[in-house]
Image (cartoon, rainbow, N blue to C red; front, side, top):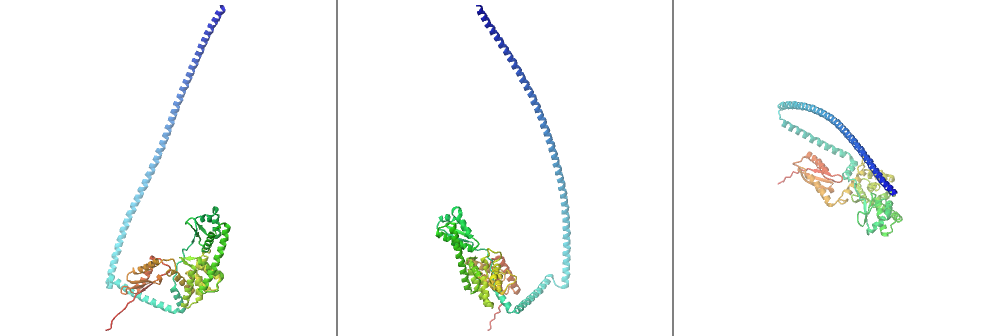
Amino acid sequence: MQILLVAIASLVAGGLLSYLLLQFLDLRKKKAAEKQAEEILARARARDKESLLEAKEEGIRLRTQAEAEYRERRAELGRLERRVSQKEETLERRREGLDRRDRQLQDREKEIQSLKNQIEDIKKKHTQELEAVAGLTGQEAKALLLKELEGEVREEASRKVRQWEVEARADGEARAREVLAQALQRCAQEVVSETTVSVVPLPSDEMKGRLIGREGRNIRALEQATGVELIIDDTPEAVALSSFDPVRREVARIALERLIRDGRIHPARIEEIVEKARAEVEQSMVAAGEEAVVKAGVPGLHPELVKLLGRLRYRTSYGQNVLAHSLEVANLAGLIAAEIGADGRLARKAGLLHDIGKAVDHEVEGTHALIGARLVEQWDRSPQVVQGIAQHHGESDTTSVEGFIVAAADALSGGRPGARAESVERYLQRIKALEDIARSLPGVAEAFAIQAGREVRIMVKPEAVDDLQAMRLARDIAKKIEEGLEYPGQIKVTVIRETRAVDIAK
């Protein structure tokens, strides 16, 4: 029983002790929580004080910065005000200076006008004194002076005409030949454009791909072998060959046509066909040159000149074949030389070779006339032929009889209707425009364009136009033609004044 009581007492004591211990621990936790809360509260108060201080410092800093910016802007505004004030002062000074100048100019204008009035009064006074002394008015004196001057001009013009006639007769037969050759001359324009493209038809568009080849190797091989540019994609079922060298273009055309017919198109085959085409073209050029030499009647030319002459078969000028043009010039030059008593063989040779420089003018610098003269000088011993070729476009300081003959024949061949690419409608329009220009001037009765538009003859009214006015009228018409009409070479203007006296015997 005692043990039980002791156990119960022990349990009670243990429970009490546990209760007290728990109470103690709760008290300690409470105090610790209160202390922690006080510390947190103290830290919060400290943070509030620090935030308040930071806010005050930030406010002070912003206020200081704003005051500094305000002072800076006030200073800048002050500087701008001073600059504006200075500019206003400068403008005011300039305005005052301009006003002073304006007043000075007005004063000078008044002085000048006053001087003009004084001069005019003095002039009138002197004119009245001269009229009183001479016994004539100003208009009468002017008319008398003009009449005297007109008589002197007429007399001087008559003396000059008689002097020119005497000098022309004194020149003799040699001068007469040159004058006749020069009268025939009609300088044609230089070539400014020619055919540079040939077109080869294709059987189908599939052939284009074969010509181009894998990655373009066939077309590159063909362009490299011929020196000609191939334009494939511009036109359907056709290939354009572009080159300024007509011989290369002809070789490329023949080679391309053969490749299309053969069907075997690869780089090795292309080189073989191009070499064969080149040999064929060279043979045809030699044959064409020899045929032209025979037709022109100038045998004995050097083979190199014959070959160069044959190259002109593939050259055109304003749509006119240059080899055919050269043959025509040779024949015309021979006829002109026979008429004026010059050497017909030299004239024909110079006429046949006058454009030979065009065979190589894409490869050599200079005009075709000078290039041709240098070429002929290497293989021909006739200085007259070389001079005729060099001078046929007036590019030399002096001109020989052969030069005049070749120039005249060249102009006749190139300027006749239908020789070059000029339509009949355009030719007729040019002739009509030439006659209309001549008829537009006063005193003209009728105008006629002759010599394929190389000359215009004007009939004037004799009662309205005298001899001196006829000379001036010729110059005026020539000037109007130069300003208002495009034409190759020269146009001769001839004014004819004729007076007829008719009576009837009864």
